[in-house]
Image (cartoon, rainbow, N blue to C red; front, side, top):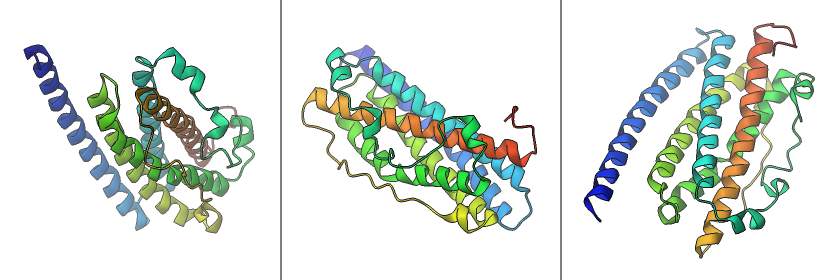
Length: 229
């Protein structure tokens, strides 16, 4: 490794540590808020605000990851990419747009958000464990963002579980969407990049849905007009 590469690796390591510290502090704050909220001390509107902030960050991270990976994605990989309908969460019936989301009850929307979030527990672990062998120059940055995604996902899951307890049995219902892709994303360079990128594209789509559902919930809880939501 030449001096410039060594210096760059040191910088990325320092950035990663700083990002993890910020994420840990944010996660502690969110966790404390949800624990306090469980006692009924914090209004549901405030809980939805926090959950929406978490989901927004998740979607932002998943978007950055897809752009990061796409910067060194071979043209043939785009031809080999499976269609969105092959995502493991595609069987879940969800609103196609905001107008449809506004027609669904608050409890059902929360149930959909929780179902999608839980469905990504295993795939996120697969992505995180596979990144060490990913043939990509931004491997370190991708790894750091995936770690942040896992932490935000866990914090958001804890918060939504508490919210569901306040919204009744329907909100506590979760549709099981098992990931059957296995832990191996491929043996050769192209297969690894294609399968990794496909999973990230599915995650980006679902994180957008989760974020949209929670923003609609937050808006409706604040009793805003539908056109504002």
